[in-house]
Length: 268
Image 1 (cartoon, helix red, strand yellow):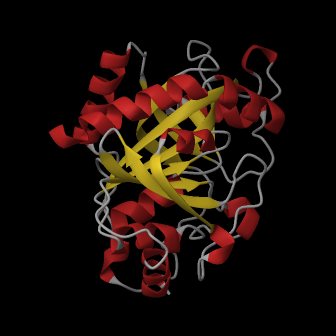
Image 2 (tube, rainbow, N blue to C red):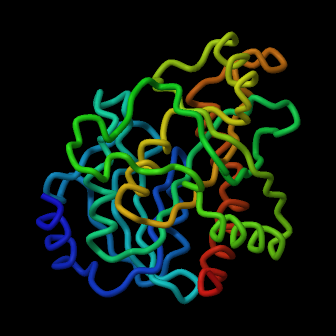
């Protein structure tokens, strides 16, 4: 399936070498507007590709040039809560490896469990808490399933992100991302649990992709756009519309950071 998808995409203009692949979270798809010489395919047209039916996820694969580098952009993802399968993104991540892309960057819209990390902030993820009870490598019978997640978020890429943020004048704190399954938002009690466990952010994606990317030997970075305060923080009661609206408001800052990051990739 992986090779079939890769060969199909190559035959549609997605050939040559890519420097990085990005999965774009809720409301972050407009990054594709920055890409030159773009070619695109709907996920629905790619053999075996998972579909995303969530508002704010266009469901397209885009390739092109950004800051002189070749990039691959996934406009949206399939979520565990849509499919019931924590490995729903396995084929796309394996596909990135099959195309020879060395760097995998996951992005998401996230809630902040800290009052000092406000909506509109960007945060570089430095670790995660898997609180979903699921794992994308369940039922994998290879030795590779015992993948180490120490430094899953590559220290060198995190340094590149910090250099890019500094050059762009963007504050970029680091934080721990807690994955809960969704689709319902977290309860205030669950947010207090995340705080107690050392989490800074909470969301419904990304962690399965990171586990899979490490399984396939990719270097990983991840960025959250904070779209809301989590439930119970200053009386917050999150909504999907708030998530989309705040992601749209932060999109220019997000685009600036990604452009600067891509420009710095040659220094990894």
